[in-house]
Length: 72
Image 1 (cartoon, rainbow, N blue to C red):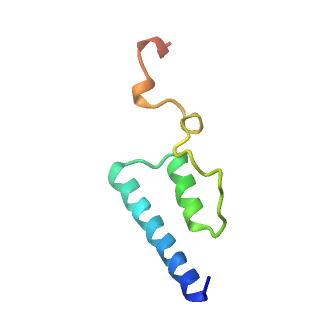
Image 2 (tube, helix red, strand yellow):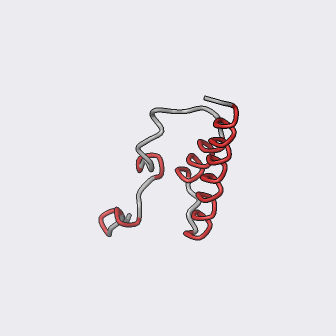
């Protein structure tokens, strides 16, 4: 891979991070999984285990998982 290709890919990753950050702000979603995505795309390391995303067990219960049975 040429230096130009590497530079283009790094620029594309930066664009992806900016899009994710914008979508998070628009959705008012700033949980641990959103931060994990931003951190991953801001770095240079590839993680074959990054997916699945999101990982619900890392984030806690989702609103659709809450019901009266969960209330104390």
